[in-house]
Image (tube, rainbow, N blue to C red):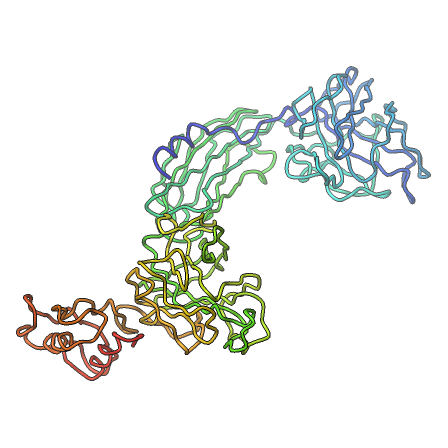
Length: 610
């Protein structure tokens, strides 16, 4: 992320959570039973129970209870009267009629013209008699709504509830939704605040409940950010957080803590924070009841790996609950494409599904290779194909694996055809991805998003590109040599995958030795200790007597003289041993001494690999 993107993120940082009026509501919906007319019902009437969470009686005259279906937008109301005792309950009977037991004497009988749905719906407790007209969700705090509960399992196009979910499973003739702690718990999360159990209606004459504690702090933390992928050296990462005190008391000495995740560094923030041991910490001071603090944290990707930033917030004041004090954001840090030595090392597009009876295998495959000197994660990256003249790229996201230096990774393509032997085991399987046997282009992307038409040769996420046959997009001038419809050979990168002169035609050859190399294949580190490639010896002894990539007398003379005293080399400049250090060093003889293994490697470097 550039500096401008940092400033934009800071400038647009807004609260991700609005403290609702019901966070410390004096009266809440404490129990819901809606299936009295179902077979086997325990009670003959539906009911909604209220709980007074304060130590003083509350007159409910001028309040209303309103109902709408789970996906409904029309609200039905019944206006309440009477008083709910301190720490007490208030029973509202609805107009369903069943065969179960009678309710305790209700404190109010509803005047709804509809019956609440048995399985799911939504109730709003309102401290006015104004009908709700809004169709948004949830409604807590709007239209003078004091408490809001989505019960059962709404589903559909307009599920509506406080927090992360409804009260729980679909309600039945023998179950009711109960607010926890005798009706005291209210974290603005129906899923966390309610449980489902056997109905037990309580009215204003029932024993009062244990006094509720509603003057404690209750911090809530929300976090977002990323992006999903961040590139080392080019991006910054911004996390937007909001800490809100949804409790009824002040949260003193509030503190935000981020354990420093691997893969990120250079932390800073607004408000300012500091590294303390293995954590990044921001002191937030006192957050009063209903107050919130927006926070922006900046970081820089420093290594390649999946990163999870897990934030937590705390206070020295007693809290109602600690279950809402954490939040996490995950992302993937990646090297820039220009620094990633992943290569497409082998392509076989002539598999059985192409209906050629000469097919060697019943499926196509593509192989990649790590030509670098460090492990490379494939997580967050993809390989993509486009046919000749096409304008749409088809993508395969790599599995979350790491390829070691000199390691291979292969992917089986398409469904098995009727021709050819079964394809040997590969590292990844894609049964719907088929490629053309006449020509096309493969590209490795530093992202899990598709390249755009017409050609990704300058796309910043391009890692490697190979055009073969009649491809209209290649590295170099012409595509890798491929005979239209060839079903007996594969296209192979020279040097066992190491050769890369950014010229598809020069870097690839066809081979009758078909074998997809996999993560279990022998490693082939480039630059010594493994396969040779043309680039190792390019320009050695090139005096004009013969082209590079073709073994001529001047190359042989230069090669031999390199192991001498650095005199007598053809050309204007003397040769030196460093030009060929490690070429062909198989252990049969030391470098700096001309041995048979060096000569064999030198000759093979002009062929299709050592």
